Length: 427
Image (cartoon, rainbow, N blue to C red; front, top):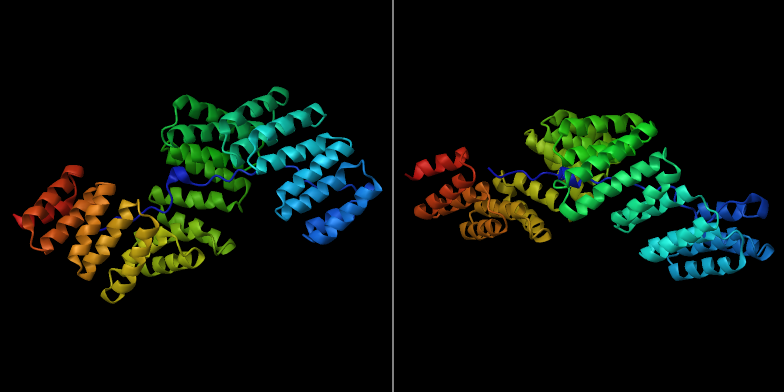
């Protein structure tokens, strides 16, 4: 039968690494009359916040707080040019300048201007802002926001030179090393020296801060990329012991448990996530796959339908729901619609094109099924698709071609019992 698509590639599991110590543009300074303005900003009352920051600025034109606050309002209004203009006005008028330079560097990073951001952070450090904290902050921006992990490593090293016990710097460097390797070679082919260096940094971060769940979560990703599922699961257990409500870690653990053949435990993790967040797409997909693999088609169908409600253009949910429905003759029209949508959304997926061929075959459209199977084989030759093509050719009475297709299936997978059986029937 048709192969079931995996919900998420282990190496592609999302590692959420928030920007560490990102500065707020607006800094509460109750003594200078900014408390009310900051409260309005936190309540997202932008009109009141703007008016109050302007009033505070008129009262004390040399204070940096009103400039920070007004720039924050403009960022929230998506006026980044205006926000930068306000910060530059503050740099010409206010003291101390370091906090304004720091905010300008953050804004430049958000605008995808890494060189300008680096220069502004350097100026902020020269103006007296804490060097280690700013190097960590800039490193995280370069690694996570700007996709330049190679440049980030130097800033984490600079932070460690003055604060060798900083868990945040070790963590940031470890993640940057992993991302550098992933960008260059892919997650499963990273050079062993880079992996070892990243592991050492992440283990240091985990040891230095026994409360942070992110270092063990990153270690779990590293171990999963290396194919060490027991070590990855152990790291995820540590992460979740530190932060039981960290839903991304629980979803990833569900995926790894499923890969390890522990479907019941995986389902428990997915359901725990969905009780907290009923629209968690990856949890819905993982739950659907685990239930489908366990033979609970009705519950899997419900999970996939929920996933499609959350994200209607999710190829995996459309594909796997089509597979389930194709087993019922009366549901074949809906299955065909779903399979077509999935294949259209992911035209480079051989698996999804194979599903479309399977549904057409079940619907009696042998010519359409043959075309889909041949298209899938052009994308990626697999034993399963050669088997399916052989079945279509045999049903069309083209026995010699069918036998050749079965032989190609066996050449790719000598232990394909279904292909062996089909070939014997033709002889």
